[in-house]
Amino acid sequence: MCLSAAFNSLKSSNLISWKATGKLQQTLEGCIELTGKALHSGKVSTVKIWPGFAGEGRYFEFQSKLIPASIDFVQESLLCTTLCKDGYKIRTVEHLLSALEAKGVDNCRIEIQSFDSKDPEVEVPIFDGSASAWVEAIEQVGRKEALDRCGNNAEKLAPYLNEPLHVSRDDSFLVAFPSRMVRITCGIDFPKVPAIGCQWFSSAALDDFYEKQIACSRTFCIYEEVERMRNAGLIKGGSLDNAIVCSASKGWLNPPLHFHDEPCRHKVLDLIGDLSLFARSGSQGFPVAHVVSFKGGHSLHADFVRRLSGII
Ligand SMILES: [Zn+2]
Image 1 (tube, rainbow, N blue to C red):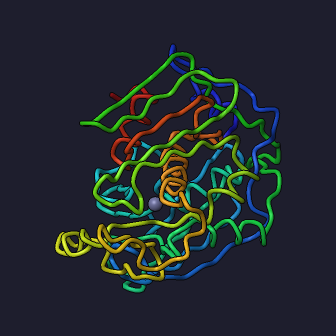
Image 2 (image 1 turned 120 degrees about the horizontal axis):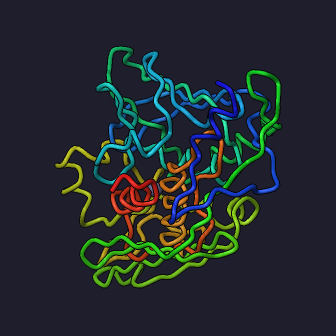
């Protein structure tokens, strides 16, 4: 792919202006390989992340199909973000994408294999329910400037929001205001679960802040909802090792928490992963804006990215 062609696809609109970040696009120095159990399917899968060419962005390879980590391939699903192409599905991509976006791994090929080689569905391993395993692996292997297939480096662009944008469903909303830098404010409210209650968390720029304050925040669930979710075919691989579980009457079942507001911080982690699906041609995906989310979830995040993309 020629970079000029890739960059031509980054068309600014009334809503978004693509601007230089002053940084070059990056990729990994070497390959990352991690194997683990998935949260929803309970199956084991192996992920290998390979260095990618500048301008080609992040994309999955599953059963010889290439599936870009793009909103264009997001399929509606419960409690996780799923990419789907030609009947092949990759579930729970959000924590991995969150780590790649926050750590500036702009271009990479993510090969994913399930132990059942004929299964058209695969799920990214959950590990401890946070993005720590991915962040540590990225740190270990290192990052380097990405080159395109002609050997040239490429400027990293970012989408700057020009005007406020919001999406909402019932009492949850996601709103973004123009800002000179990325800011994220997330709120959650569980009035029937006093140990969680109402929490707000604000995050500044990504990278270092992400690594220290967000990456290790784990997936959470409400104990009283576990049976209902299991009956819906979800969290088959869920355990006290890969999520923090809170009971409405008994409080946290597997303390200690990494932060008193760990559930809210995990929402920031998810938001970064889901909004990274706006990335294209090795650009930043998360919009340069102040993004405020209240009781957000993966479907609302996807709606927001579709609005940014002009799809809806
Ligand atoms: Zn999550």
